[in-house]
Image 1 (cartoon, rainbow, N blue to C red):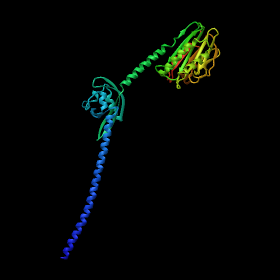
Image 2: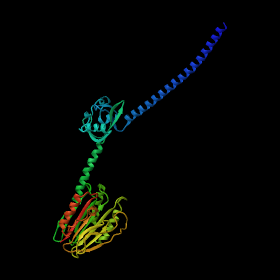
Image 3: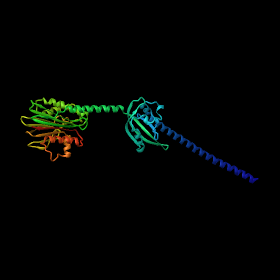
Length: 392
């Protein structure tokens, strides 16, 4: 009887111990399950947040965005901006083929390039639902998800930008034609022969030149201008300087004072970034004296009794300081002498290439043709102009 009681007590104790162990184990498992559930909820929230950010990015992007199947090139998804650009409703876009939208035949080649290299960028023409063509900046990027490949393409409507660019190019081309029409023509008289060359770096030039006869035809007066820059604003500055020089021709003052007056005038409207080089001259046929005022143009070429080759000059640039450091230079000339006034574009090319050893500066036509060939055949980084004079 005692042994049975002891066995019962032992079993009871074992049950209590086992129950306690099972309770603790179940509590531990419950905590693990609860933690796992919390982690699952957290990951779901993170995933949902990421998905919501992706959706917000897709919806609110200022660019049109589509997702294309990498095998069929059909649209799987499109954002609101794309539908607005192309004029489609949401239900009309999905599963359209990219060729249904593109005018440019190279669009599939762009997508294939994106698959091969990871991305592709181009400017392409597309057709809206209403039939109107638009120009877009098109970029395609390869993505991978769930062991599948797709293409994310972005569209930016640049139709208006392209139209404005084309209009601007047309205006610049017209300005270049007007600028060239204002240049004086070549000339041959009993007193003098004149040849010119003019090659802008772009469609319009910062260079300009002019000549005219003053004092009853006894003096040939002219100038070379080289305004810093190459754009439309620079061309307008040359036009302004040309107007000032036309007024200066009529002034009965020394040439150096004409240049000082021009500098004082341009200081009023030149910006801090704007300056100009100039060389003004007057050739007196009676005294056979050439008077020069260099202001920033660093040299010219001459073939005369006293000089043959490059004549270096100095002088302050226009439009920088109110009081110029310039002087008049006088040179005697006689029949057969040749003078070649040039801008920095030609001086730079001569510095790089040198003058041919067999070039005779007294051979006026051959030298003028050589300068013309130099600026047309050489790689230039500046406007290039020349005003060439031979005293007959």
